[in-house]
Image (cartoon, rainbow, N blue to C red; front, top):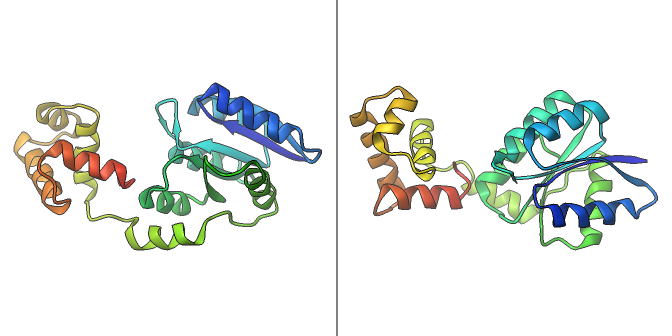
Amino acid sequence: MIRILLAEDQVMFRGAIAELLGSKPDLEVVAEAARGDEALRAAAATQPDVALVDVDLAGDDGLSVAAELRRLVPACRVLILTVFNRPGYVRRAIEGGVAGFLLKDATPDDLVGAVRRAAAGEPVFDTDLVLVAIRDGVGPLTQRERESLQLTWQGATVEEIAAQLHLSQGTVRNYLSSAIQKLDARSKVEAARIAEERGWL
């Protein structure tokens, strides 16, 4: 029996997946979670074989949750669920040691097959997606540029970014200006949007 943890914040979608997987004789959903902290507690308590983790988990970064889950339960194989096939996401997922990356428009048969393959130790990645991630997944931004754009994307002002990153406002403006140029954007907000869409934040 393959024991499964579902970490997905959309209740209807999570329920549909749980019902689908639970209908298979070799699969059992042993825990469900809507938030990252819930998922980690559930994983520690139930020791699942496979975890399905939404990349946007009720405000949490699903990729970070997946990495922590792998640390807590090393034997658990993690599959990332997402509606986005962003190269940066795929690359971070691979670097985080997840077993696979599954788009939410996958067929029910694809989902069931992915869980079984992951449990068997097989990687579950689309080849074309991996090639794009290798080519485009790193992105041109430095860590400080990413941090500055991430806070911009969250609505922070230059003053607030400077305070949070313990930098001068002039330094933050320089990071944002550099990011704008690298991404061929017209503003810091547009640069943040481009970086977010490509999975670099």
